[in-house]
Length: 237
Image 1 (cartoon, rainbow, N blue to C red):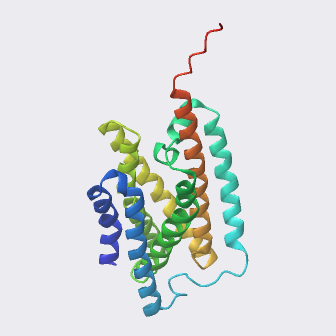
Image 2 (tube, rainbow, N blue to C red; image 1 turned 60 degrees about the horizontal axis):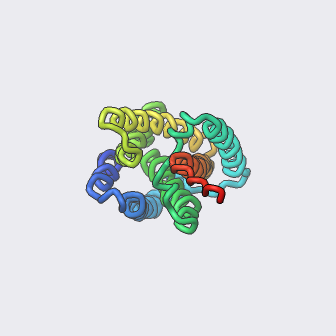
Image 3 (tube, rainbow, N blue to C red; image 1 turned 30 degrees about the horizontal axis):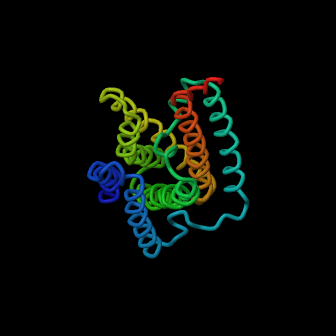
């Protein structure tokens, strides 16, 4: 548990802060994804893949949860897009600046594979199994959720810097990110327990991140278009 917890608390944050901002969203997920995948495979080979929640799902739970998540998040995104102040909070200028090919790769490859799948395999799979071996259920759930929240310190800082937030506003943004992902982590580990595997959690995680990324890109492009000066009309001759 100790090395897994240390990895969850420190590794991604140190990686994000040590990389130039232009490389963070590309290099950090690849590095953490490769290491997370290696830890998962090693734990599965040693303890058994069913023990760490990688048993196959046969009741369609993952599909149902995934579709429901996309519907709920799309509703929230639509409401935020309809209000300029909320749209500004939703917008991600980094996604808005990507070419269509890079945006597609980011949203439909990196997020579901290197974020949702590997994070769920590590946090709701390996880490949860390790915590359950030494702690009561409630303590294992909330400690795992807290570690998942700490995992997002680096991304929270990066998002605040990308949005040109002041240091106090950036600190608040990071704290909110940690708090929100802690609550999300508790729900995802509950879902993993209820369904008997990580696959429904993967579907929910991917559904939230991918749908919000699509709205964040669209919001960023709308905000950028709104901020551009209008073209000067050609005077009639």
